[in-house]
Image (tube, rainbow, N blue to C red):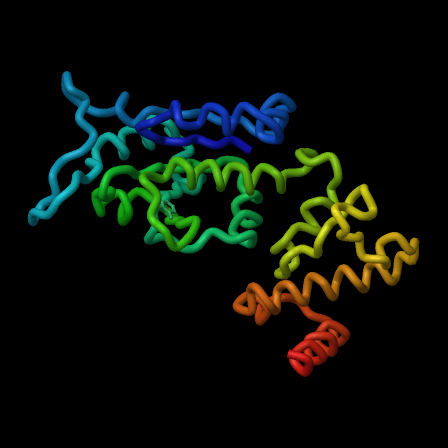
Length: 244
Ligand code: ADE
């Protein structure tokens, strides 16, 4: 997977891309990342990238021409094959299913907006997708781009040591993840649930499934409706509803 990231602040990405999983994925060649400074594509001696809004009002708007120029220069011949994703709080919500969908491409271009907004012509005539990472407003799309690179990269084959790791993640199956424990067996008076020490694999699997169901029911009832549930799951949920 190749990521092109268009930003006014390439320095923000140092650290996030230079440690841990992303670092290793880059070193092994699973991913490549190219940061492109939008300012380099702005015309004139001052390389201006923003301007005041037509119609008045506060704040500055990112000009369309440097963003179009940067995208066209970076993509060249590939301009139609690569998703051009604008990070914006007005985009479709980023979820695990979107990460999975993006991971099937071999190249993504991410455009990070800044200031009060981006000229509408970028939304309408350049971007092929608009993504928001949540219902809050960040100072720019850079952190959202890091989130997408991270979530997509860990889904690529060979990036995580244990392929079942992404399988069991929260959200992978439409449920939150069950709780995890490691040594010591009792910590500050709080014991590890007995079943996990029992060695009964079937019991452990059942307990984990029920914990995932209970957590999702308690914390994220909104996602429960679209989860893949078995008859047994439904029976357990009914039992929970009965006990309140
Ligand atoms: N830019 C500002 N806020 C954002 C958000 N929530 N998601 C994506 N990009 C953004």
